[in-house]
Every structure is written in C-alpha cells, then in structure tokens.
Length: 98
Picture (cartoon, one colour):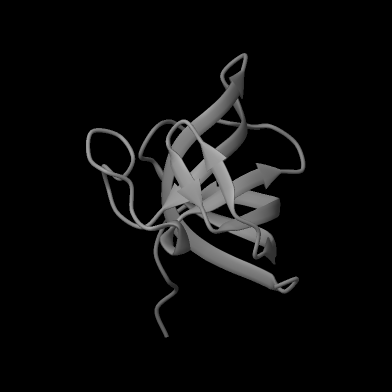
C-alpha cells in the first residue's frame, strides 16, 4: 500500500471523454469483466491516470506505472481491490530480453 508499481494488464474502460481514458479497470486476462463474471477484487485494479490517455481501447494490453493503494471500489464492470494513481500508461510490448 502506497508503493510505486509498474504492472501489465488489459484495459476495461470506465470513463472516456472525447476518446481519451479518464478511468479504467486493469484486469489480468483477456475478456475479463466483459461477457464473463469479473475476476475477484484482488485481481482487479482501478486506474486513475493523472491526465486522460488517448489511443487505448477495450482489452488493449498496457503497462501502468503509479502508486498503488489498497482501496476497494465498486464500478459497473466489477469490484477492484486496489487503486493506482497512474503517472504512466503505455502500450504493452513485453519484458525486455536480457
């Protein structure tokens, strides 16, 4: 709780304005929260970017960087067990090879 993280996942939009994401859920597998029961709250993160992000759609894979908070939150798409105040949302391209 309160630590900086960088975590990958799939986008489930909650609030968009003019095509930009203002708030979304980060879920662990493709299709979660869409046509299936949502995953448990401990596998779902509510992401609140510091500024709206463009170019991402439902089920796109992203890296999210920010501060993690253990706060439970309800939404129309499911319950999240965590909130991330995101300072970065970028397209997922995998881990760097060493």
